[in-house]
Length: 423
Ligand code: PMP
Image (cartoon, rainbow, N blue to C red; front, side, top):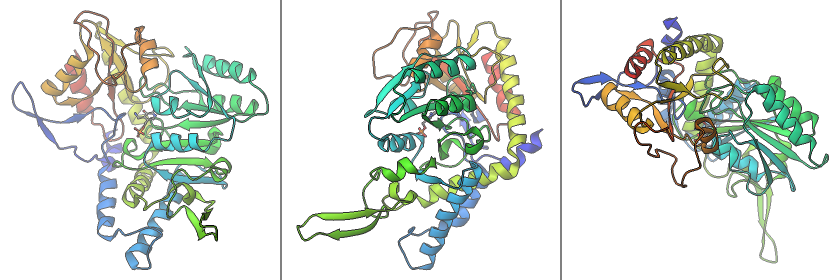
């Protein structure tokens, strides 16, 4: 139903790019999983507000008051979008990576952390001060739950523990059994944070219904421009922690003691972790995207995207040289994120050809999920340093993959052009 897309036109949809084979073609952005194009509606909202922006929480003037108001009402919009509970806090950050690093900095002493090796590096790596258990890649959603339960039942029962799990894989697009993993975590006295960087743009996320403790996501994957992210969820660990950044805005009262030292009372609201002048444009654009998705009817968007997923899966299945990467099996439910390799092709060359000869932007590489991609490709660990494009000689097994990803606003023509190009 193309009418579903109409209110969700994407910015830059009419950009044309030159082809090496001659001529120009409308650019087909099929790399939503890296950064989705901003919705025109979001851009319009931001453009309407842009002449009026001012400092947040830092001014008596009209523009400052207006900006403070929009900043705080954006928090409410995001809380509603995520179905937050009354006691949850919404902290604005720079990105999912930033949100998870903030939570990592707020872990209580002696916290254990459990992650699957399949995670994006943003959810795999921030937990540096903690004891981290990295769990084997499961081959079914049930196995994921069983693996987590086994790991949690082996730990000392009373200490704090956190599970970090992605809702939809940035490599396979497969949906993870978040509700079941949350139940398992809670049954063993652990908490759980959902990396919703790939889930939130493609699927409604309800923090209370999923019963997760925190959710993290990025604006630039949720059809907003760059620069802002969200960590939403339970306040207690966040309020007990030292501020993520120290500075103005996070501090409620600062005094100089007689001995010359400085005494600080920190805020206990989300402001505690938002020191410095906030990115009001970025935050406002996230809220605008939440509103646009809600008003367009998220269920309709999901239904439309699933038609495209089916079309891509069927199209790729018709090309014998293509192997789609999957952890949970070809029929597993997934969002519009699909990775594959093509026999006889170096994935980087293949992706470059899609761009240069067809005007299609996809991604190649290991997608900042090295252990997962290696598991899926059955390849050996490589030298460090590559997030991009290790070489495989033509005809050899690929050492990296190609990822096509799409969502709101993707026209049928882009998908058909992509499948035609692959064929
Ligand atoms: N988690 C997942 C699942 C992702 O796909 C990404 C981005 N590729 C991130 C976290 C990190 O997001 P950001 O780069 O916006 O911090």
